[in-house]
Length: 393
Image (cartoon, rainbow, N blue to C red):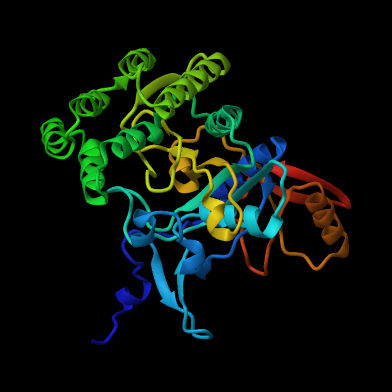
């Protein structure tokens, strides 16, 4: 079929371009956040856009695999994937490229590509920014990462935030104790994520023979709400496996510290919130803002993912997406005045223009027959060798 003019500029569904005004704001947010992370000691890394699938996707779970766009490397014949997430790349850099035994803090910002959007209005080509902390297994590392995620949103003027906490170890421990097969665990996991009460009870009755474990799993499905959920969970699992008790204790410690640092935050707990379940190992968390039906930032602990790269390391981190933040940010530092210099073949004017640019001013040099650009706010004026900048009314 012959390609029409429309076909030539039509972008794939869910893939968009950023025009100058939006691009300027997104770049301002990117710089602002990377400077914030640098202030916390997080070092910037820039992983490649494409890698071999056995390095990029291994250990990340099936949901990441199916959301990856794959291509064949013409040089080797091996399968490659355009990254759908940067977390695994940061883990590879920590485990293999840096190979330090010390605590390592890394941050990044770059485009990723998904086969399908994560939600109805989501982009298939988001710009992901995030921070990861490696080499520290204590809850103190989780508290730092959650705090940095909060600071990320606060720095952009997003103040009315609800933090949603969960812990995958509770469900995973109960599933292991119940001896669920991989298929049964997956089925139960899926109905728990849908919060389908009747289906949850049906799957538990069919798959879990131990009455006590069945009751605990059913009770787990109802543990959602404010901090009182943790007290209910502590009572419910008082005699449960140590891993469950430790998970509840971690949630309580994180909640106490975060609430102390940020008293105005809303804290919500959902012990069946298992985002990233296939590779997360502990605390998971997300941040929600008014008017958004999705988490504007999320993260969690994913210990030992570096094992597939030859070195297991404790790990925790979070990610967010710049395009999504653009619609929520209220305090973004963008370019201010733009000065127009009318076209002149004049060495003195050129010196003035360069001096202004050296002072971080934006100066657009006019071309022959060009009028003042619409975006310009000021004009460079020469009054018998005396240069001044005048406002454009």
